[in-house]
Amino acid sequence: MSTLLLTSGVLGLKEVSQRRRRRRTWRAHSLHAESKPEKSAIIPRAASLAAGQVAVSSEQKVYDVVVKQAALVRKQLSSNTSIDQKPETAFPGSPSLLKEAYDRCGEVCAEYAKTFYLGTLLMTPERRKAIWAIYVWCRRTDELVDGPNASQITPTALDRWGSRLDDVFSGRPYDMFDAALSDTVSEFPVDIQPFRDMIEGMRMDLRKSRYKNFDELYLYCYYVAGTVGLMSVPVMGIAPESRASTESVYSAALALGIANQLTNILRDVGEDASRGRIYLPQDELARAGLSDEDIFEGKVTDRWRSFMKNQIERARMFFREAEIGVTELNQASRWPVWASLKLYRQILDEIEANDYDNFTKRAYVSKAKKLMALPIAYGKSLVRPSSLLQTNM
Ligand SMILES: CC(C)=CCC/C(C)=C/CC/C(C)=C/CC/C(C)=C/[C@@H]1[C@@H](COP(=O)(O)OP(=O)(O)O)[C@]1(C)CC/C=C(\C)CC/C=C(\C)CCC=C(C)C
Ligand SMILES: [Mn+2]
Image 1 (spheres, rainbow, N blue to C red):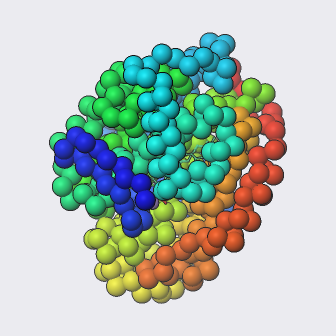
Image 2: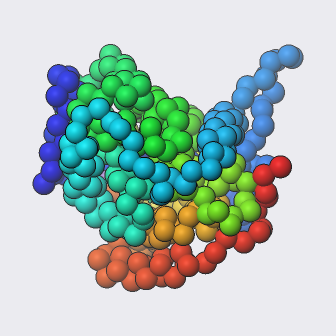
């Protein structure tokens, strides 16, 4: 098993033998609607407060980030050098050290996310190693609050991790994993904001174990998973023949992160409850006649089943939203994304197959089902972008 070693003192990251879950979120639109929610319900604009005041919803705040990220990448990609044809840039240190750094990132990725790693092998070498470097940074960040040393992690430690991130983006990497990421962000139009936001999600995890409503959970989901979508698109690239707007592709990427996180949350309800955490909207639980105690008791009742059905439907809606964007990615990047989308979405089917017992059973996709999903994902990845999405104005 690989060892991720952060040599900066408090931020020690070690090998993790057990899978840890965490982060679970939801969506603001009515959970009780059977039909697919309207886009306007997905991105509510603003809620009224007292005269003259407006509360901006989490979805609106996150959408503003999406718009900004899309604009940044559009600007940078309008320079006409193709990333896959770019010459190696001079990076401090020897090129062989940099190669070793990327190779180590690949090993970590293969260790922690085997299926996804296989998918990256279809990507161009430049894009693949960049995704590995991002993956490792995300994994290390997650380990801070979810790994074996989590109990020692304080907001100050997260501040230090944030300063180190600034150094990565300024070309002053601390260790070899950071060096790979420094190189990646110098090669691809990747912005620092989603990385900072992921650290913010870790801060949220330190101070919060309940979420009042879906709006709060949505923000958490964006921080810990939607950000991954925003970090990945500039590397995966949008197909040159795509007529979709950059914003719509970013929105789809965000949706996939949210869908994955919601699924992760639903899979891990029991495990989270055992740590005193409930990543489900308190107002929706109350409306379903469920209390924290019901979750801690972990009894699968009809109320719970009905609640879960709605939550699963919401997660599926995000997956549907994400699907629209996958086809718009560069051909070689589509397969790993389709594969991860299909595999993660199947966890929802497995929760159903477990008769909604996510207290004592961990829903998982069998190896056989995983293997079956891969050629289907490959077939999907051959579908070329259509002109159905909005074009950039
Ligand atoms: C192809 C692909 C999936 C690329 C993404 C690669 C990448 C950089 C992944 C980083 C994932 C990571 C380590 C995130 C840290 C936070 C975290 C752990 C989030 C949870 C992931 C699931 O992990 P796991 O089951 O191991 O959970 P536990 O640690 O055990 O709790 C998350 C649920 C979030 C994962 C989110 C994504 C992979 C986002 C996917 C979106 C895209 C790749 C954008 C695709 C583009 C379009 C247009 C749809
Ligand atoms: Mn995991």
